[in-house]
Image (cartoon, rainbow, N blue to C red):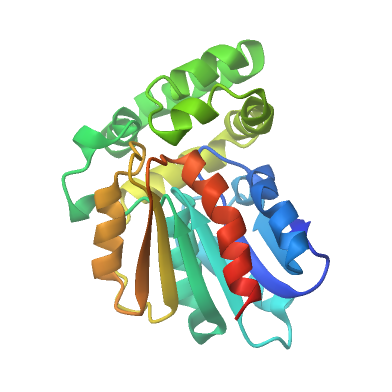
Length: 270
């Protein structure tokens, strides 16, 4: 599967799983801190991979690709952001003992683990994906049109409910320059892959009994895309050594921006 590389061209291997909406360019958040600490970060362009309805093939292909990139090195570190967290966990399950550390940032937990919908900004989308697939498809096509013809309108819709650190972040031109191409790719040529991940997520049962890797949850206390209770659920569902890092006042993307340099620093010191 095609992937993009950030940070150092060599060094410790980290695999980043972007969110949904999202794209591989999202991983640029890690580029500078990864270079600073001599870490190589790769991110799969997974929305471009056509696996049909075979989800097992989807996860297995990425696990195989990670193993091939890893080569003779013993272990890999995994980072999953937002809904990319569930994909990161599914791939990690297939890599087994080769995964040393898992970092989950603003992670979305299984929906069957609690009553989260009332607190989630994306609840409407998840309900459509779960119960009304054709309407979900039409909504995605509408977002696709906006991404090309009126990207600022799409941006305002997606970040209308931004709170905490995301409220300040969403008003910055630097963040808008970062996120606009991501939204254009996600809702453009990669929209079918985006839809598959959303539909897979709402059906994800989240059996995490296998996960014995050292895991850290980075979560903003003001996150209304993935409520803080989701981080607590993941902390209790993962039997391995799990740490919850609460970032005060941060929301979804603001948590990612604040956690990225801290994650790279931690990995370089191990």
